[in-house]
Image (cartoon, rainbow, N blue to C red; front, side, top):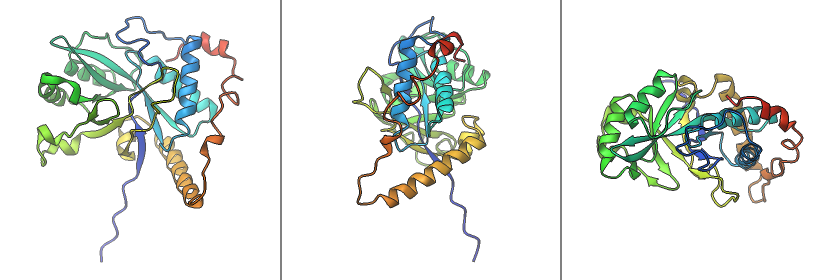
Length: 274
């Protein structure tokens, strides 16, 4: 009998969130230093996300790369039990139709509503980032053209589950047996916008993604992956121990006062986010 095949390691990720909501949508002047309001909203977002049963969350504010890097720093320095992937939702243009491309690990903003989606994919790659087509179902009659031109430009993935814009099956256009189905990673996102309430919670729409893909694309380090897998195993043990009981993970991160408001916020406000 042959050796048993090792099970692929995965992490649960929400790839699409907006702690700053639409604050810098299509803005050519998104900040590189946090305003007090921005910083507080990001902290509240992270405290909420840390209570969810997910391993990583991408911060993809509209046309603002800086908030993702700031969120990553806050999570690391506060010791939160969740990985943050810095990202941005880039506003692109296809014949006057606004199309969104999710980009990860960018250090500089792309000019909003200027590039075509496939040009944005190429530019993201030129800058060392990862490009995923957001909610393709919402792209109307331009959907197939956008999808295939982004595919030819080398996009890394496609969002197949979105809380706001519904589900999308790449096989609808590619066919069930297309080699592209294997190459494209399929992502999911809550598309959570923070408007001062928790009606829509980050992590409600997430997907299991192979660790090898996340590390291979440089979205997380192997060390971060190992820590996240250890936390996941601990959560699973906790779940088994709490069967039939009321489990309470929220006790640790339900209040910001324990970590965020003790920070010297003026110090952080002086520094650039990226």
